[in-house]
Image (cartoon, rainbow, N blue to C red):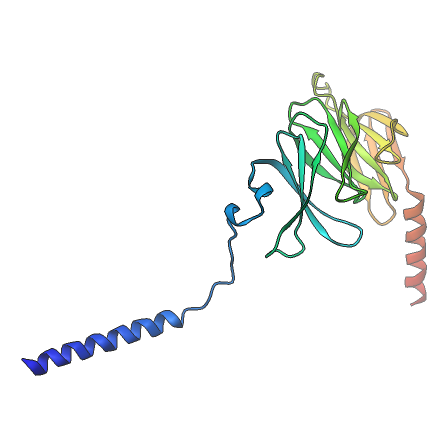
Length: 229
């Protein structure tokens, strides 16, 4: 009886050691989940939208839209293990919106969720963004032109759908421009040539060509370098 008991105890000890060794040999996970409670207090509040922006020095900032559009929380996310809230900015806007995309890295377009239009958020000072231009129509940038211009697709949320189908586009020479360089209606087709910055529009009035001289000059210079290599 005593011998049998000893054997059982010995087997039990051996099994326990084997299980412990197996657990120790499991690979450590490379994934770390940071819950809201572990992050800075201002980031724990409900947010309507967010976007990531790199300033001129390459520092990444995360912008959180809070309080139904009235506040932006700016978070330095350079070190993912140590997020740092650097600013809380009142926007002067009193309705929620969505971030619709960057323009030339220093402007962010926002579109109001109630369909009343949009605005531009200036990021020239990354820690002190400002609403600089509010639009009554939805002019969504779809293609950059040169250093600061862009081609925008325009829709009026209050208008009836066009018949036959056709879209309106504006050519803007800068994000802050109050008036477009040109507007084209009933456009049915767009083709872009990235190497020269050319945009071709096709509509009921025929072909329209939008040229970007700086892009053309850069393309000519690049072609010349390739020919001499």
